[in-house]
Each structure stands twice: as structure tokens, then as C-alpha cells.
Figure 1 (cartoon, rainbow, N blue to C red):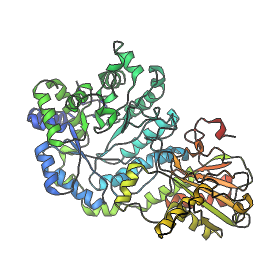
Figure 2 (cartoon, one colour; figure 1 turned 180 degrees about the horizontal axis):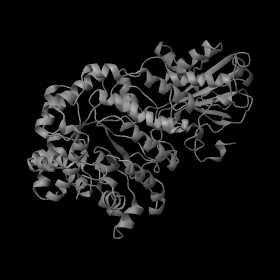
Figure 3 (cartoon, rainbow, N blue to C red; figure 1 turned 135 degrees about the vertical axis):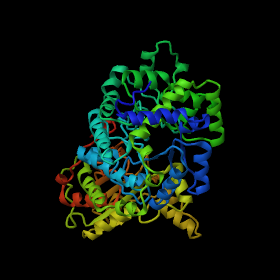
Figure 4 (cartoon, rainbow, N blue to C red; figure 1 turned 90 degrees about the vertical axis):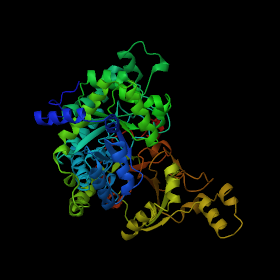
Length: 589
């Protein structure tokens, strides 16, 4: 069963009695409710009261909102909870993962590029100080995946790069930083390890192809170090690990292979028996196709618990899922022994966090705490330090291009390359979000402030859109035959900055023939390409001769970028945390 006096709990006899007596006094409904984390859909008290009193939730996560709203929600949740509830947040990059007015510190790949473990410690500490100030008590972090495949868009920005040793070091430092916050827990993700498959588990299967020996030396090493350092919980990913599963159970056929969250071989045989993890396990979100495409949902819910997971992330329909799990428990599909084991880990972690010893009204700090903590100047200064130290000069073939000065390159054309944004991008447009000055406009201002005549390129497609908006007949020749002499193209500029502003996926160039989106002209005039989102743009523009990764487009990052461009190559301190050449030989030439 579960040793509550061992790592990661270290409970006293008194705390152990609270766990045992609480479980003994619970109804079937209360036991089943503790197995669920729910994503709240409303901050209204009637909604939150029902979640706690009808479904007896063990944990809760919520969508982003201002700190004041989240804090009030958390107060209401704890008010109606018979057993104090986990309130989790995604503080993997900063306190902005806890509330909208929290502070972004830096993504995993950005901190890895800066190469300083103390930055990962600061991230864990500062992000979760902000989270705790509004009543959160658990981080779904650190992200301890390892990026082996540049086409994996699910974790490329979130993981601490592609080196297992660096990922282990940074993940442990994040955990140590978070543990400086009293009563705060971490659930590292995504076990058994994302970063190999190009597919996204939100929409498809995801496979970790490593042999047991390879896994033990990489992902396994990362998790062992975290466990040795008191990791509280693990989030199971919907990731298949077929070679290890077969090593544990040679009788498995291909049709029997399951994602980790539904695999007893991985969740029990590997995580519990081989790694010796004694802490709590929660599944990743239950709506993800990597989990839902394996069996009926009514079978999937109890299967996750029987595989070795202790909590299930998110209802689909609360009434339906709760009833399904309750019936599975009453029918013996989930045994009494397995239920007690899961509850012991859940309540054992709550006891470790000291939630059971606090009066309800003290589980969530007052508004004055949030006001004093959110947006502290020390957090903003840390963001600036990381931005200064992370920017990476990945490729530098034209060694005399830098530094740029108004005397050398007065007229700079900025070509703003974007991604398609996907469904989330479309949703933000519909909601009127994401407004304000574009990344290109903010870069242009900074360059003009330095004395450059910077301007933003207008593509033939943009000009056609303007004609249509003005009620004019569009000139399709602008798109299909919009070519001109090379001399005419370059005469109005001294340099081009190709600004790849692509948060995820591949860049969208517009494909205008003879236009300026694609930097075909790298030998006609100086070109500097900058990836200010996903750091893999060399796969699509391998011809560029100077390429820089900034990892995001925050104001502090653009400040550091422009300083570096004007100071010279020695100002770029970052080291490539992945293979930004994407394994392509032609990206290096």
C-alpha cells in the first residue's frame, strides 16, 4: 500500500490518523469525488457550491482570469469543501499561469537557453509565490519532457530543451524553488515523457519510442532525480511507451498497448515498482484524443484508476462521469483496496501540505496578500535578466553583419511572418482578444528610437485585402505576377529583418511570387532572421545566413534583442537548448 511516513509525505502519526479516519468516515460519493479534478466553467458561487457539495471534488483547475476573481473563486471552493481541495494552476512559465495579472518569467526553452539553473529555481519560487497569494496550492509543473523531435509542437516551447541532463537539473531546481513556498505541491509532467512523436496527444496518439535502456538513461533519470528530491505528484501523459510495456509484460500485443494513463505496465509496473514513486498521480486532461481513442469513456474512467492513476483530470459531463465512476466502484470494477490506496495518496498529500490543519477561512489569503505579491518588481527584473541572457545567435555565416548601426543600415524593412494560429487563434479573434501593437510594430519603434528608418513590409496579399476592403476590384496580378527587377526591390532598403512570429507550428509565408515574405534575396542584401516564437524556423528558411532565437516577443525580450543587434555578436549570451537546425544539413550551409 502507501507509506505515509516515507518520501514524499513524511507524515507524523497524528497526520496518518487524520488520513485513515477521514477515509473511514467517507461515503461512497465522497470517495469517488476525491478522484476528480474539475475544470471550473464559472466563477459563480452557485456553480462552485454545487461542484463541492454534489461532486465532492478532490481538486480543481480553472481558466485564466484576473487574480481578484481567482482568489474569490478559491475562497468559495474551500468554503464548501468538506475536505480541503487541491487548487492547481499551470505555472510552468510564471505566475501568469495562475492569473491574468501574474508575471510571466520565462518558458522552459527560454530558461534552458539562458543556461542558468538559478533561473529555473527563481521560476519555481516566483511563479508559485504569486499562485499561493491567490489561494492556489499546486502547480502542474515542472514540464520535464525532453525535446528530441523538432516537429513536436506540444512541448517544444515548454520543455527545458533537448538535453536530458539539463532537463533534469532545471526540473529539480524548479521543484526546489516551488518548495520554498509553504504548503505548495508540484505535479511534474508528462510521464513517461513527451518530445519524440511529432503528433500532439490533444488530437492524436503520441508515442515514446525508446527502449528500456534508452528511457532509463534519459526520461527515467529525470524522474528519478525529481523523486529523490521530494516530488509530490506526477501528471500521467497520454503517451504510449511500447518497448517498456512489452519488457514488463511480454504477452502484450499491439492492440493491447495503451497510453500510460491506461497502462498498468507503465503506471504501476514502471512508475510504482521500478521507480519506487510513492506520491500521487493525476492523469492529463481526459478530453485529449490520446486517451479517448482507446475505449468507451465508461470503460476509460475506471481503467485509469485501475492502471495506477489516483486522480482523473476533468469531467466531460459531471453527472455522467461521476455516476459512471460511482457505479464502477459499487460494482467492484474499482476494488475497495484500490480506492483506499488512491485516497490515501490524495489525502496524504493534502496532509503533507498542511491543508487539514488550517481553518477554512485561512486556506486562501486575503486580497491584501495578492496586492502585495502579484507583479512584484523582483519578478519583472528576473524576466529581464532571463531575456538578456537567453537570446541565441544560432547561425552566423555573414560575420560582418553585426552590429547594426544607422550609419551602416539606415533603412530596415521588417517582414512579419506569422503562423496560422490554429483554432485558438481563431477563437481569440472572435473574442476580440490579442489586440494592441503587433510584434513587428513594437520592433519597428525600438529600431526607430535607435535612429533607424524602419518600416514594415506590405505583401501583395495584404494590398489585395486593402483593395477589397475599399470596395475596389482586386488586382490579382499583384499576387500572380507581382515581380520586379532585383535592383528595384532592394533600392529602398539597406537590410531586411525577417521576423518569424510563430508561437507554434510552421510559418505562413503567403506564397506571393516574387514578394518579400520568403527571404530568397539573402545574397542581394543583408538579412537577419529572428525567431521570436517557436525556435525551429530554419527548417522553413534554411537559406538565411544570420538567424537569432529570442523564444518570445515580450517587451523585455525585444529590448534585449535590439540592444544585442546594435552591440554585436558578443552580446548574444544564449546557447541553443535544442537543435535549431532541425537535423537538416542544408540549414547549416
